[in-house]
Image (cartoon, rainbow, N blue to C red):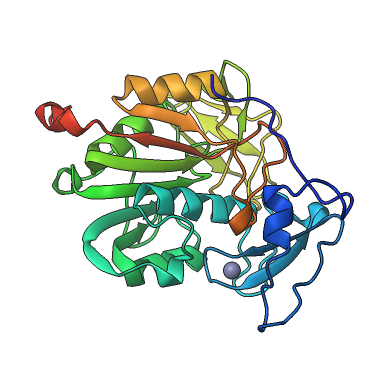
Length: 296
Ligand SMILES: [Zn+2]
């Protein structure tokens, strides 16, 4: 596995040896000034790569799910997605609004955050899809006319919610991409081997008015969820599994992906500093020579 502890450098003392973080923090991010603001312990200046807004964040506010851009409300997770997509598309650290528009690049999102979905639609041929709303897409059964059409696919905190077997979502993602296309993925994930399937025999579920969750088996029988976990409040976002890093990587490779890689490294320029080896963003590629396997 390529997951390991990462070193997080914060400004402790001004006389400390300059680190990449210190260099970044010394860059003025507001109106031109003759004297750069000195680094302040525990603070990080960065430019939101979703909207381009200069941000001053503290260590405490850089959690995975904490909105800390005053311009668009982006979180570390959202900025990590755009950072990895930007690298995959050769945009480097350039904030999304400054990407050169290129309608030859086709991208697809699965219930993507509107903050970057709207901006992606301005710089490439991008469509955001939804499970329950138009344009609708079930990633486990993508329509044949979309197979092999996309240069990139974004899926952020979606695959933990799809019904088992999750391998169908991996296969659907593979089918949608062009050969050489990239999947940028986040899921809640622990740095352990096995994925914990909460309801491995479920083919559906419903939420009772009293909040109870009833899972349905293929034979039509139902059973209650002992301790259901919802993301984003009660509704259609029941957590079906907690991914283990090994199973996630192995599952994507089994679907045909190559270069499956977690990204623990920080992207200080965009305010992405992961707290640890949990729920790291991941990229995977459909092999360039996958054309011969198009019918998979
Ligand atoms: Zn922003």
